[in-house]
Image (cartoon, rainbow, N blue to C red; front, side):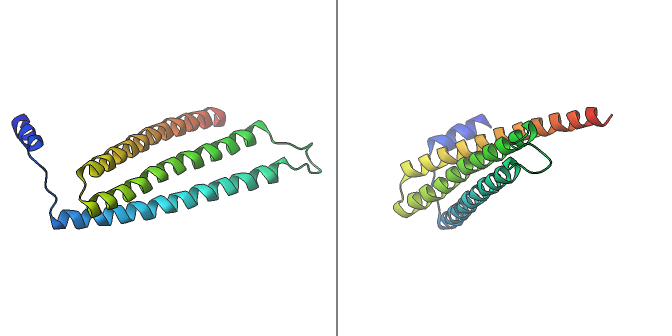
Length: 147
């Protein structure tokens, strides 16, 4: 098995017309989902701003300002929006680089493009693991409060 991998890596990889078509479709969808991610990030920031405005105005039943819980929630919204914007940027950049590499038949650009999607995948994985950990802590914390 190792010999097969070594011999594969030593040969030139060729992209046929079917693979090129699949890569073009992938690039287009990466650009579309990247743009949609930018829009989603902007909406989350807008909603975070509205949340902050709504909860920082004084009313007849409280003295004004945000509580610690509200401040933590606002901070989390902003962090989520920024992380999502970074991931969307990496995905959008992957799509642009992939289209350029295929259009120009540039293997160096294709390598940069694959390095970019590798960074995207690593970041997406790290964020997913962190979210699972944070949600687990939250569930355990809520379980302790309910008991």
